[in-house]
Length: 88
Image 1 (tube, rainbow, N blue to C red):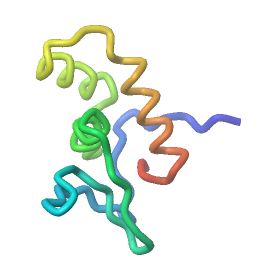
Image 2 (image 1 turned 180 degrees about the vertical axis):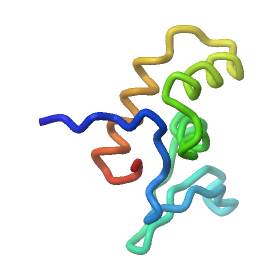
Image 3 (image 1 turned 120 degrees about the vertical axis):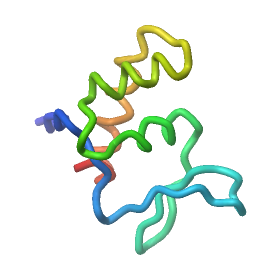
């Protein structure tokens, strides 16, 4: 059974998103370690604040990066993040 993606995704309190100078990239920190993020994943997760809807995140990213039709990729990342416990 697939979990339903929240309408207003937010990062789990167990994770902290921050830029790591030593890694030269955005990472998700958690008590047991760290997840290195690619630039696209970081841009999506930066917007997961519980206030923005999935559609708003997609629209914001399309405007910021002059891209169209990225909704499925954004949703896929959010669903994967939810499976991994990153998203509440």
